[in-house]
Length: 101
Image 1: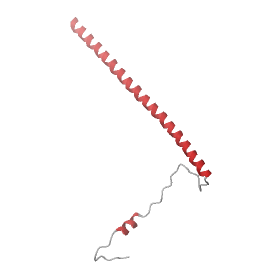
Image 2 (image 1 turned 180 degrees about the horizontal axis):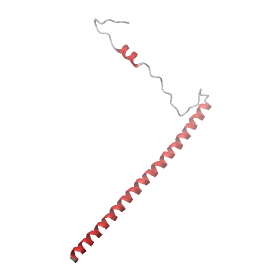
Image 3 (image 1 turned 90 degrees about the vertical axis):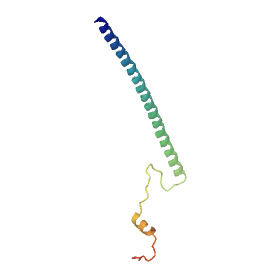
Image 4 (image 1 turned 120 degrees about the vertical axis):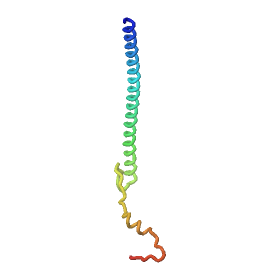
């Protein structure tokens, strides 16, 4: 009976060691991921600051050149034309077809 208890204790000790090793590996991976996220965050902050600096430079150049309107961060979208009209105009008339227009 004592050999069985010793084997169970040895197995329990191996399981515990395996668990600790696995835990340490996961902690290392988690730390690496957190470091990567922190680096990316710093890069994003630097890019945002650079963008702000570039926008100020552009605005300064526009003011120096008497541009009609200062540059802003919003893009103007061109109005969409009526697609249906364009599609109708692009369809070629075939022989023998009647043009209702």
